Image (cartoon, rainbow, N blue to C red; front, side, top):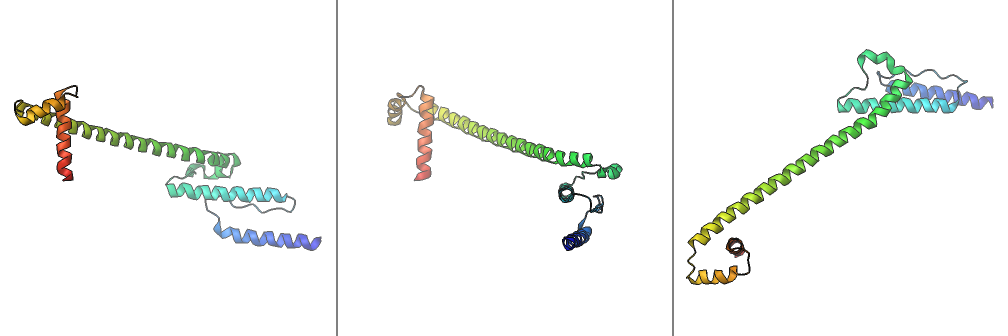
Amino acid sequence: MGEMDELLAQLKAEYAQSEQPSTSPSLPPKQPKSETTEPIDDLLAEVKAEFEEKSTKLEQRRGHSPFNPKNASSSKNPSNSDNLIKDLPQQERAEDKAEQERKQQETIAQKQKQQDKERRRTETLKQKAREWLNNLDPKSDEGLWFEEFAYAYESKLEAAIDYLKAIRESHFLG
């Protein structure tokens, strides 16, 4: 079994050497592993260090620094790094919520613009229908026809609006 232990120690030493150039300067240097520590503890420490490094890179890409320069020495405190790890998902949720609210506000603004545009269109059409009704001779063929047409409507204005819409559509189609 002595050869196995020597081989394992050699692999650990090679792995530690290959990891040293890629460590971030903001992370604490890796502690040399003693032969008495459990392998699971070593793996846990490595995973935690990698996670902290990735979290740091992610925050730096976003333009935030998770480490306060005044407290750079306190980054070695495991409870501080645990808090940073816990805060990361909360920050992401807050950013996602803000993005959703912004999109919702944009959607509401677009709907309001569309409603305003439709209201203006309706008001313009009502005005044209009033003018058309004022100019309509009730004794002409068109006036007599319109009287029969408007009979099914609650008001002559509604009938005139529908009639003008139909005329407009037939001009666009033909």
